[in-house]
Length: 179
Image (cartoon, rainbow, N blue to C red; front, side, top):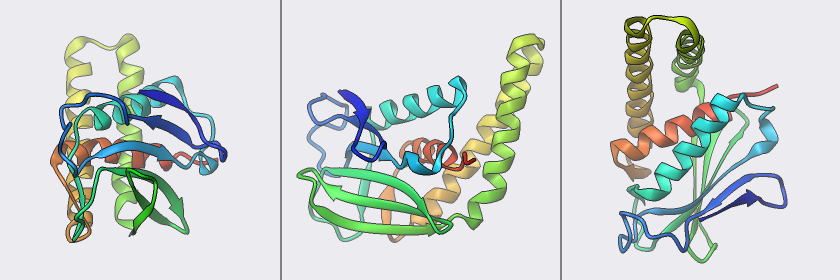
């Protein structure tokens, strides 16, 4: 697996030569890039979440654009004019499809998720284990809710499993961090 940035400064992780649990399944992601032009400096905690989400996605995912007969895919996620853009390319880096989703349905859940994450990161420094666990349960619940929303919004456009939706929701949250 290689890490780096492309010519436009987008974060890049390439899994082309990595043996993954989805190896052999053509309907999977082998590379994910994020448009970094809309993002400001992230905290170490958020940067860690981004790296883990990308690594876990590349280790195992289910990703099939509707009507697609080819794969695997390279995905570039960006935000343009209040829309989440899934720029999907084939493994050979040829344009395959572009799916756009309004970010409006995600606003409240992303805002709530950021607030609870902030509480969680503060709590792990000083709070009792029971309090940390309660906050973490709420955090995971909101994350699951965001994942289900994403899965529903992608329905009829891109088929993904729940774990793939969870990791993509993490990346959507990262893309929401703006100046």
